[in-house]
Length: 119
Image 1 (tube, one colour):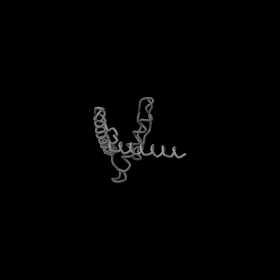
Image 2 (cartoon, helix red, strand yellow; image 1 turned 90 degrees about the vertical axis):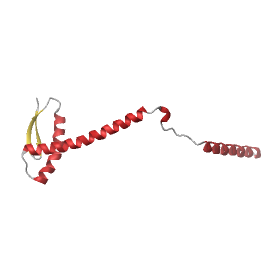
Image 3 (cartoon, helix red, strand yellow; image 1 turned 120 degrees about the horizontal axis):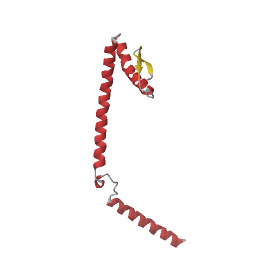
Image 4 (tube, one colour; image 1 turned 30 degrees about the vertical axis):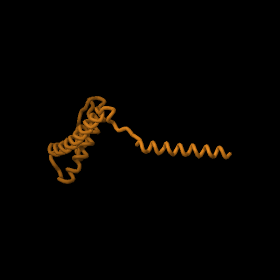
């Protein structure tokens, strides 16, 4: 089993992981360090267990917020996918616009016919 040294708030820890999982461990350690470093700067030196607990709780809080947002977005997607096709927004050209365009086309054709007659 690979053993890596990770640094959290300036302290070195030896941690083992499954082969091939080293990059995940290093990434997780970097996230934990990103939470622990400001704690150390704000509060000062803490026992390892308290520093790691507080940093872990801060990460858990962020994770819970992301999971809530993910649940909300999944529910919204499911709602949109469950809508019948007939209720989906479909661009509709109002009849008055269609009639106006038809009238303009008729006038343009009439003008083109008059021009052809003169030439």
